[in-house]
Structure formats: structure tokens, C-alpha cells
Length: 358
Length: 276
Image (cartoon, rainbow over all chains, first blue to last red; front, side, top):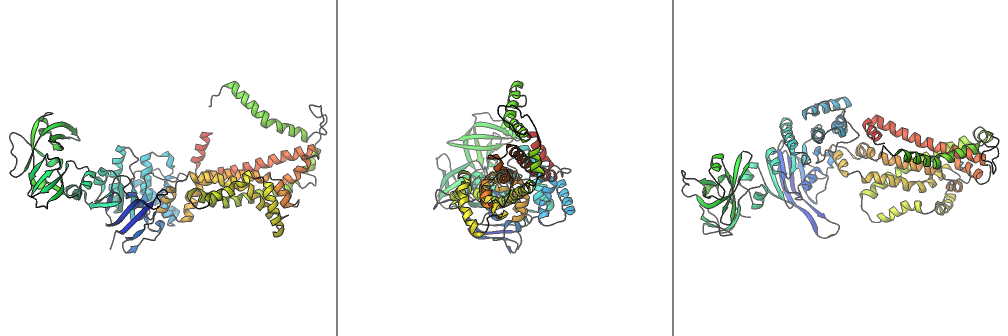
């Protein structure tokens, strides 16, 4: 058995004021991370993802559960002996040490000789693009450089697992993208297992092999970016992933009826009666123009264009269909034929309809 | 601030001189005066009798300076060893009786040392600690420790536990964490506390007198009889010597700190220098 295994780990916090009530709890969580994998925990702030990370690091002690790496039980092993490594939101470079000494710190703790550890630090710094900075002090570096040095320091001792707690969130957006690329390249080159915590879904989607979505101390869904996007387990996951067009409604006798009664159609999906959420991905909504015909059996809507937005080389149209606001992704050709307030018809293939229960 | 209005600068310098410089000049003159009586503005005759007495005579001055410095040094070391864990606990942990512990630690600042020393004296008599340097050292701790704890507490309160967590995640055990991460951050606070500890210990008279019973002779023990009515010239010379000793002690502490920073991180010194 390889990789990190988290079994039924839970943690309750008590605040001073409400001594008896649990102010915050991490529900029992099971999770397995494969060796060499880039795994992200994605969730809004305060959802418990940093708590989970600290439990895995050993900086917090869980109330119950086990943490194993490979065959070793690490639950009661202190953090310094777990051979994990961590990059925090701030770079936390020791101010009284040079960048070289900072980077070599992990090796120094493992009692590696001075010459060897400094040359290893140098190699690591070259990898993160900080060649020649060995003798500078942290305060002489920019924010991005400091975070690179922190990354080099975390990797130098070849950790079994690299934990990262929103490491790029304090950086400028442009810099953040550079750092992502750097991290991604280094992770692949060294084959290190990474557990990455972020609230930025773009970051998680771009970097990760698999993503775990967290909310309110619960792990809602785990999967690859594609799986999550195409088969969200719940409307909560869907809305957190930034999916548009989440319509709540009910299924009765094979018919879906939206809650505001603005939409009703027959589905070919065989589903039990009851409350359902319909998710329409923007790119599956297709306009019906004069020379095209909707495929037979597809679901049709009538609506009016309320707004056209141009973003990242593509168009999105806000379409008012009854009481519903739908978002629809359009190509340039399609968008140029539309005018604001124009009435139009849209269709969705039955196979592109996604239903989630809660 | 740099380009202060010139007359104001002259004025402030003058006040500084009047309050700090002038008393020293008066002391200097008094120490070499052979009788300085009212209403003379300056003494009529000068002699180096007082200096000769304290420096080359059989007054035991040098030995008392040695004793003073030795006691101050040991007190400082014990204070550091006590204050660092105490400050750590007081800043970082919540525990029952924390307020009480703080109150007891800081009480010697408010309560006159005489009160405590009477009790300590009795106990030390039983333990046989009176008339010994060890006894005096222990008695000096009570008025000096609060300042040390205070200074180290300030240092601790600006040290986020994130730093230690980071070191932990890099594989550093408790000793390494303290030595490589905590201590460098505490050092300025420790230095400030140590300076105060040295100064206060050096200037103790009453406590040394009672616990040492005249057998532990520090410089203030020699100095006081001359001030209270003996020989003003000798008292003046002793006062100057005392000031010199204190300044020398602080200066060497400063030099040691600078040397530490020079070998560890010259840039810290650079930043500090720029701020001055």
C-alpha cells in the first residue's frame, strides 16, 4: 500500500464562549492520495480545508481517526518526524539566515554535511529560478521570489508529501500564474506527492490530478476536474465549481417542472419523482438560427437576449427565458448575429441534461 | 525630524547637557577638590587625594568592582534562564492562575524591596546563605526578574507560532526550533532585559547590605558611607567610578550583541543602522 491514507479523521473545535457547543467541526473524513499525485482540496474559506491539512501535517491532533503513509501509521508521530514538508501562505523564510541557509535548513536538521547541503540547496534554487541568490537575505527578495525560495526549502529534503496551504494567494494574479506553471513543472520533474489547499477553483483545476471539494467541514466530492465538472454530485458542488444555470425543480411522471413554472419538459432519463436540480452547462445551450433545426427530441426554450459579454475570446449571452436567467456560451459567428433584447430559441440535447438530487 | 529647526536643536542640546553633562562635571570637580566650601564657585585648591585613595590605596575598590560585576553577570544569566520559559508560558498559554502568576512576578516593581528582603533575610539566615555571594545573587533576582520577563514577553508576543510550525515541518525538533528560530527572534528583548538586569543589580545597596551583612562588598557598599556624610571628594570619585563601571558593562553587552549579528547576519545591523 502506498500513498497517504486518511481514515475517519475528525476534529471538533470549541470556542471559549460556547464551551459546550461545537463551534466548528470537521466531520469524519476518508481520503486516499496516491504517490506522485497532485491533489487539491478546494473549498470556500472556513470550510475546514486548512484544518484537514494541519491534521495531516500533525500540527493539530485529531479527535479520532488514523493517518497512514504507506504501511506506517503516522497518527501519533510528531510533525517533525513525518518527513512531510509544508509551504504556508506567507513564505516564512527565517530572516536571520541567507536564502542558501534557509533552503538548506531541512537538510541541516537531517544532519547532512555543510558542503553537501549547500550544494543541494543551490541545485534546488536553480530549479525554482533563483540561481545566484544564495547569499542574499529574505528581506532583499520580492514576494514572488520569497515564495519560490520557500518552495525550494520545502522540497530540498525530498519530503514524502508536500503540503501547501494557499501558497500563492498573497501574490499578484500574473505572478500567481507563473508560480503555478513553475510548481506544476517541478512536481512532475521530481514526482513528489502534493496536497494543495486553495479556494481558487481555476488554480485547483489547472494544477491538480484530482480535486476534493469541501464545504462546512465535509468532503463533498472527490474526482478529476473533468469528472467534477461533468458529474457534480450536488448543486452545492456545482455552484462552487462556478457552474451556471442551476435550476431547481421537481420531476413528476417523467416530466421536469422548474420551481418557478417557467420551464417544463419531458425527460428521457428514467428518474424517480421528487425534487431535482437541473444543470445546463453554458456550452450545451445552442441557439436555433434560421438555417438550422433543433434535433428531434431535444428540449427547447424561448427567450430574449438580455446581455452579451465578451470574455477570453468567447462570448457569453445572458438569456431571459421566462423567470429564468440562463447563461449560454456562443461562438463569435453566433454572437455577431444577435442583438440585445432579440427574441430567440434555444435547444439542449437530452444527453446533455444533468440532474442532481440535492 | 532630520532637519530640525536650528535654534531648537541648540536649545535641546543645551538642556541635555545641563541635565546629564553638568552633574558629571560637578562630580569631577568635587572629586579633585581639597575642601570646597560655600560661597566659592570653584574650589581654591585641588588634590588627587580621593582618587589616590580609591584606586591605589588599600580600599579594596578593584575587588568590589569585580564582585559587583560577578554578581550582576550571574544574576543576568539566571534571569535569562528563568524569564524565557516564564515569558513563553505567560504569552502563549492560557492557564488557571495566570493573572496571579503575573502579579507575583511583577510585584517587586511595586512593593519596596525592603519589605521582601526582611523576610528573605530571616530565611537565608536559617539556610546559611547570608554573607555569601550566592545569597546576594538570589536576593538580587527579585528586583531584576520582572524587567527581564517583561522584555522577553514583548519579544514572544511578536513571534507567531507559524515560524515554529514551519521549522517543525522542515524536520526541526524542539531544541533546534528554539535555537534556530525562537532565540534569534528573542535576542533583542533578552538584550534589553539583560541591560536592565545588570544596571539594577549593580546599583543595589540595601539588599546587598542586608543579605551580605557587610561581608559581600560591592561598589555601592563602599560608596554609601562616603555619601552619607563621610568624605564628599571620595564619594564623588566613587560615583564617577560607578558610572564608568555601569557604562562599561552596558557597552560590552552591546559589543557582544553587535558581534553576534555581524557573524550571523550583517544585514540586520545594516537595517538597524539605517533607522538610527
